Length: 419
Picture (cartoon, rainbow, N blue to C red):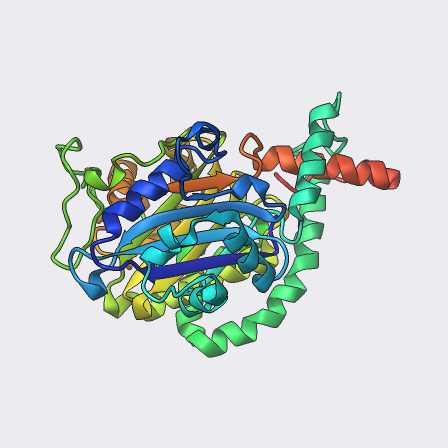
């Protein structure tokens, strides 16, 4: 997976929002540029398929409440190999007629100052997970080729066997020292009590992970039963989204007009923006720090606490902590993705989004209301690109294991870490 990621959020010049949306939708609905060959006149385009370093990319238009009720801003999210400077230069080189895209944004003054424009509008994520960190695009493509040509699945220990469990524990123990080195800094930044409370909130439904099970037993941690059995989802789910409170912000159906649809390839993306309750900000920061620790130090290759469908996912606080962005690239359908999250990391979803206006009163246990909340805060990606659109996380994991076995036959019995 990529070694780096980029988030850019730039205000759009007043009056250019509709033109930019139209331009991006045309790019997103023709991501490979097939229409351009027969177009009567040159069109603005970003030729992502020509890149040898970009794994995933998306562009979306988000509301810009800080500059006015009708203003919007351009979001760019990428996962890439190599240096930041080389990536920015490649982005510009892939763009035809940059003035028609980047020129719609405040602060863009021409190609020669593109790097400065990007740097000015960069957003740092608070948590960033990659299924295969530091594995390049070239390595993934080679692994997928090996996986496609293989007659048999890679050799390994039987999933669920005692030996497989021991191998998993051994791998986790090897990762724990690195996490322990990061722990004092986390406690210092967010405070011991707040950090422990954040960890308890995230971990409450993760007993399937042995070290989380130990943490939950040691801290007497468990997930509370729902207070009542009724969903808080609106009865008329066909109606357009409405804010839960005056401070809430939702995405109406009009924003989806003309944007590329979901399920066009084996992967999908989720772009979510919610408004954070001010009194919950410090606890949310601690929660995201705990999640980042898990993602960077404790996640086994291809799996985040047992979920093996996420390629990359980031959380970032925007506007000084007033809002939170989620940007995820995942396998399968939107419905299956949310169902898997609600089943496997229910407490983690609560820990993250209970800080946001509109989150269901019963939390992620109320799956119908959860889906309504997510849909109403999801922004359509006007452009979504994947360098390997037919590949799942498990495909890549198998291919990498096959490649490893071919180069190191002695490792042929090593179990896959994507469990």
